[in-house]
View 1 (cartoon, helix red, strand yellow):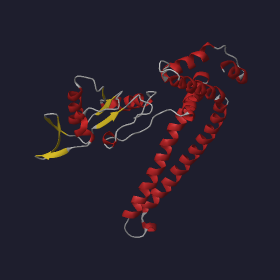
View 2 (cartoon, one colour; view 1 turned 90 degrees about the vertical axis):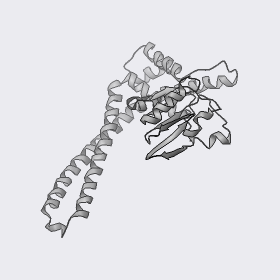
View 3 (cartoon, rainbow, N blue to C red; view 1 turned 120 degrees about the vertical axis):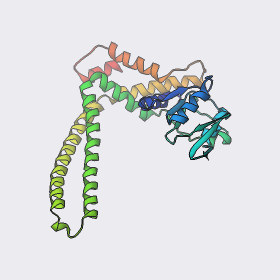
View 4 (tube, helix red, strand yellow; view 1 turned 180 degrees about the vertical axis):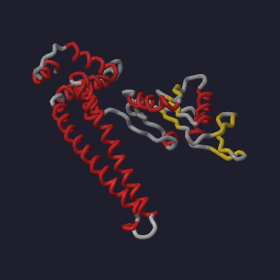
Length: 270
């Protein structure tokens, strides 16, 4: 991951927390031991803050140089032959904003650009603003997104069950009492789910209207962040992390006097 703001790093760590993620750097003395353990147990591994050069010791993993020994898939890491689990995953992150990897390195990895863009940062800051100003609204929005996804999944499951029943049914469908009862029950359940989805969508529209009022604050925030980021081109000593900026951003809202008038509040924060 090309990850100058460290967002991919946090995402991988959160995603892999429950899976026993191993986190290390290329400079770590026990790098290969950690790699062997992750490969053997099928655990994810994150190597953070890599530069333009990768340790040649990683080549067997990056190019997936596995082979069969007995009845087992194995891989050779240094002088050690290790059982290779298909569940193993390796993630690399770099803080370099515009890395130029050699063709030899590029063919071994899949590059994903996690660099922030203005619209993406604005969305993140908007969520932070609403969480700070209207935590009830942001929590409701999060719940709606989760429940809507679950309801659509339930709807898809019902449709799949009906298709399976139709394809495995013998004789005429109109004579299959079990199938008819299932279709009737599915019709009722589908109707209930669709009503809930429509209600959730209406609530989402109302929430979006309120959230839109705070867009000017988020927009001003993303402009300020990218202005600060551009200072690095003037002098490399001017380096500001996204985490630092977000702390300042939230602090400015906390320290600004509260008011019930939204327009006045936005003007004060800006």
